[in-house]
Length: 215
Image (cartoon, rainbow, N blue to C red; front, side, top):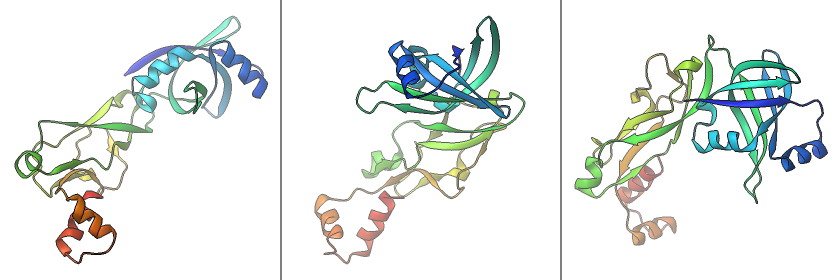
């Protein structure tokens, strides 16, 4: 997904300057890349919309940088950001300039697709998703909005590992190939779970089920 935004070059930094920028409805930011960094001001609403769209580091931003009477157009991604824990407003944003001809590494959301898994419908199992993001490497233009994983055919005790995920042409997944992305595990009764947590059961089957839930 691609977005458009404008940034104004700022000459000064410091806590006092940052507060002034925020009071004006802007967000202090820094853009890194090409061996340098630059101080910027961003529109709070525009950047917040990009983050709400759940694009994060996967969303390419066509960024117009305004420096007095001069303008420059670059492509960037949001590398990191800080949020006020009380008010929820953006405090600071770090951007990274990308070269469309060079591969980048980003995190992409994992979206579970398909109908209710077989093991959930037939055996009253529980669907677990240990990994909600995957680290990938690809050209900026190939970054997907999300990676879809179809869990509909999973039976009780089955799962999908990183090595089994099809991310798309030109996309390399960097996570451990043996890591579990999604799986269907057996339910455990509250009484049995409480007994295991207090060490009052020696049933090996129960212990095995507990480990399945936390894969």
